[in-house]
Amino acid sequence: MAEYGNKLLLARDSSGLPVLAHVIRSALAVSDTVIVSHNETDLCASIEPWLPRRVEWRIDPVPWQGPLQALGAIFSTWPHPTATFHLIAGDLPGITPQVLATLLERLRHSNADGVAAMREGRLQPLCAAYQQHVATAFIEAARRGERRLLPGLVGLSIAGLEFSHQPWAVRPVHTPDDYKAWLAEGGCT
Image (cartoon, rainbow, N blue to C red; front, top):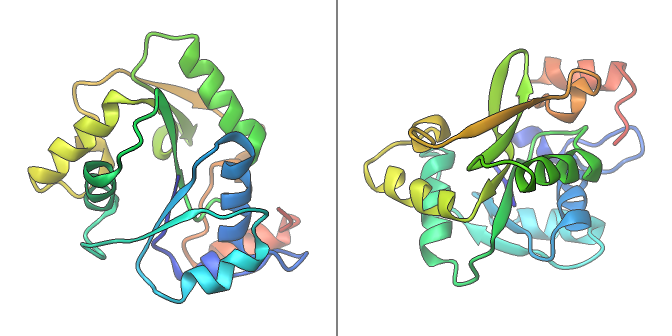
């Protein structure tokens, strides 16, 4: 699952691939179903030509209210419960299927409710694998008016997994300076 909210997602790597297309391709490599929450109606047409197969596009019914509100809306209307799911920010240009598989494998071999990547010592809840019941926690937190993911995880056991050997795998591109830094370090997904 990729979650959209950054204009730089259409920025391209050195091979011409949009960042968001790379993130979705990585998700498609490890998941049968990928849902993309987004705020712009023309996003699908911009990204679909880059994808090997279709994804499910969902317009965020509460745009710009934070990722938790978008997730609450998606999970409260999604009829396909799964045992586990990934949550992946759309602005991770270095994410790989291997990182996603590692998160899921660690989750399967733990008693945790989720396993999130760590960056600079901080949990990255938008780069994680979760047990299915976490979706209910997100729905409930969204109904309480929470906007950020961490309050939605209160009371749950979330293990952290450091990816310091792959810094761009879990480092987002939020600003033009981030984008320039990523390009300077190779900028190829």
